[in-house]
Each structure stands twice: as C-alpha cells, then as structure tokens.
Image (tube, rainbow, N blue to C red):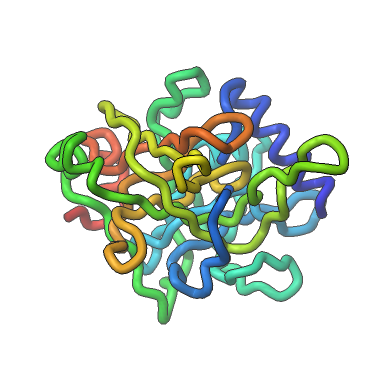
Length: 262
C-alpha cells in the first residue's frame, strides 16, 4: 500500500511537471467536523486506493481537482469511488461509485488553468449535508482588505508536515482526515494564495490534499462555504497553499452543469 501510494503521488507530480499535489500540515485530526470531505478512490493492481481529497457539494456531486481526474484519464481508468470515512481503509470503508468529469481546458502547464473536476455519484449520499459554493465573484467582493481579516480552513487526507532528525526529512503519515488554518496571502483572477508558514502560526496543505476544500473562516467563525480547492504549493509544504477559485465565471460555467449555483 505505501509503495503504491508513493508511486501514485510521484506519477502525478511527473505528469504535472510543476509543483506537487497538495496534505494537511501543522494542523490536527478533523474529529468529525467536516463529514462532507472525503477521498477520491480508484483501483490500482486490483486494490482500491485514494489519490486525492474532495468535498460533497450536492447529494450526488463530489468536487475535486482536475489534475486528479486527468491523471486517471492518462491511465485509462474510468471507474472511481468516493469515501467519506475519516480514516481511509481499503478493507472496511464504505465506497460510493460514480463517474468523473474533468473541467474542459484543464492545463498541464505552469498556468494549470481549469483545475476542477466532479464525480457524479450513482446514488445520493444520505445523512451528510453538502458544503456550499460561493456566489459569483465573492472573493473579489471581499477584496484583499476584507480577505486579510479572514482565516481559511484547509481539510484533506494528505501527508502531515516533515519530520526532522535522525536522517533526511520525511513527510508524516497520510490517509486520515485532518484540518489546518491558514491566512490570506494574495488573490488574482483564478487563484487564492494562502500562507501556511508555521513561523506565522499558519498551516495548510501538502502531498495528497489536492482537490480538498479550503473553507472561509476558522474556529468559531468557520463557514461551510468553499473558497476553492487545493491545487498546488511549495515542495516542502511550508510556505504557500495555492487554491483554485470556485467563484469565477469559468468555474461556475463548469460546476453549473452538475449542481444548482448560488
């Protein structure tokens, strides 16, 4: 399992030829606070394994990153599942089958435009209330000044922060839903960049959190509104969490084919 997971991550990185897919660093176990966050699952060598994180945005639609499903397309893998169990276990989790759709125009270059995808589930999810999408241009309306007053909560199943000492640095374990809080860094047309610098008290994403949500607010002020999905970040997972926005015209044109938009 671990060797296959390392191979999957390595292949995604090579396919993108840019920065790595992103996991929760300098955070804590989720503790059931985000039941609508789950894993995108496929079969490798006949065994189910998760490759990315994501969020339920309607009873039948799971939001994740385009580079996750583009990777599956490159392997000619069409059959996928979603699991909302807090700890991934191929033997005991509940798996919900669905069909994935990658945002048209997804780019493999440094721009990495249109980095969204959805999984349309065969059956609606019961007993989990979906997270919310923002209105059109919501982050633009808040603007840099408004965004600087906010924190953001990243959620995913990826690696924890690097462990130092006793040899080369290694990333911590993965496969458990975790959360971390970061602060605003920059905003542009397609991207929201968040600080995940532990020296500033921030945390964020790393290997395996791609497609996972970043919610507006943190702690008592956290909302279930998704600012965007984790797309990329820096190699050591210690500086910037780069989020693909879901409040833009392009994002909404894609998502509106599958869910009702606010």
